[in-house]
Image (tube, one colour):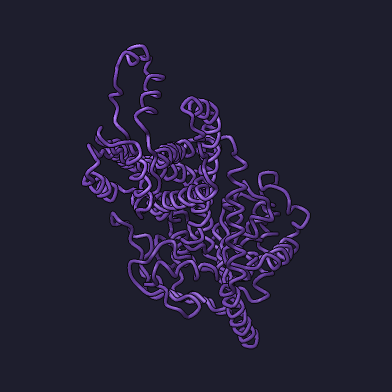
Length: 329
Length: 224
């Protein structure tokens, strides 16, 4: 009898050492996580219709801010392409002859803050005006060209910001030939301000929708926990740690987030694809080759990552609230 | 293996399920726990399984004082114990194999080891050809045996059974008890709560009998 006991003891010591080694092995750890992740995915697949519906709701909530952000990004790009055209219009005095204007334009081109100078002579201006305005008849009756010479100055890219451009304008106004130098920048600034408001608005909407995703995933996981109550009880009874019980639910939340993000990406892509043709047509009417840019792949990762984080956080909250309450009794 | 010293369990509301219980069951022993329903059999098993905590007294499992053990460490203690329930608590959405594998998965065994050990346990209980079936398709006796396979697959030091033959006919009950003897023969300590007095009397093992929360045979130290 004693011998058997000693054997038992030795056996159990050996057993425990083995078990410890097993738990510390990183390969086993990864294998376990991969297994739980796949199992959770399989569980979602088995109830695919309801899983897909949940994921779709999450997707819509994620697609809204992503789509709005992309829209804003496109508008910003549009105004950005005009930003370089924050031009200075320099109206020369009427007394300045065209030759002087030409030499002035030549001189100004040498300035480091100037990218290009286009001279519009009074004759050119008149021709353009009469062509565009439809007042050709009236203008013909004038015995003198009322229009001055105009220099359209584009600042170099380093000087296209509002402060530098207005310094450039001041430099032109100080020239003796200048009647009036005007900075065509105000509307760009206004647009930038409007875009800033829109950006804030989208930030607020994004926060609210992120909260909605969080609550949705939390609630889905809560129901899942209730459905699997019996299983949780049994696993706890046979020695499952809280971590073990928690893990499949956390993975489930992550999957919902990732799935939602991928669907959101598809939604946004489709939406922009549908918009791109009419937008290109509209841009064509404005003689612009502007094209809607769709979600870059980089943003897909941002979307997936945020979906993952929201999923993990949402399920973590639900699990923390509901799992500890289930104890065998 | 199990040592109770002056253990009492009082539930909120004042009902005392166990009062002043002291006994010692040695390592490698097998014993029965009897008594009428409400005598405290289930409570006693729940104390050993750390499902309930005693209000007073000390509980030792495998020479370790577990009376005030922290909640975080309970799962690791439970892994050394195999439980068999009357209503066997199988998971009906998993196959027999997956049910039996559960303790090994929980303990973090490698995938390759799990298959080997599960099949060994199923083989011992004559269930090898049922591993792909779902528990719902099995008979009551087979379900109970799946429950036993799950309890022993992890090679626990202690088996606890709460009315394991409660729903079975005498023939099957005898078979199940023979299985427990078999496990006891290879060194597993076994404690079985049962009110099947005739069956217990057939078998020659020590009996702890509870009456209204007290041990009726206080001398009942269960040395083998």
